[in-house]
Image (cartoon, rainbow, N blue to C red; front, side, top):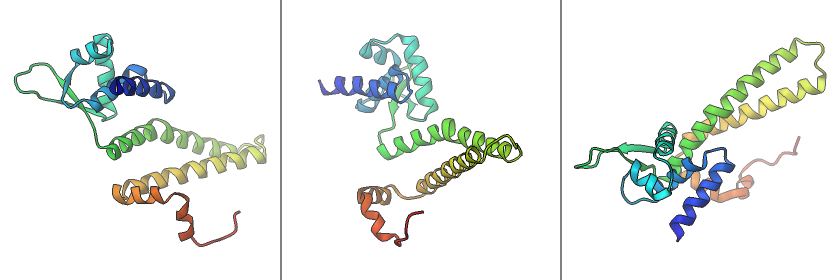
Length: 174
């Protein structure tokens, strides 16, 4: 069945991305579901312990990938996933930036500053630290700028692929 295959594959991919398999599987189930699901339904469908489901739902909520919704006549919490792919990817990128890129930039800035005042740091190491900081900050600025580009425009830009370079002035590589 396609739904089961997707849920299992999404769980495997989550593991490769550093996300707990159960978290990724729950996200996949909610993403494909045509109705809000209660934690008990999620646990039964996936064969996952209810406590694991609760922990996973909190993590997914922390990433803003799911939200709790009221269901008429139900006392239990029900959950739905963000289904807009652009919004979902934007939220994941923002979360990863906050957890990975921002601390990396802070650490690199500290290392570069310390290297400048340390005569025991060689020129090669110092130059490479500066290059890594510059690259990371450039990518961070690019990410921030892309957040302001409308999704439809961004999709066109992505579809252009490498053809976009023909719109840039040609200069020899450094």
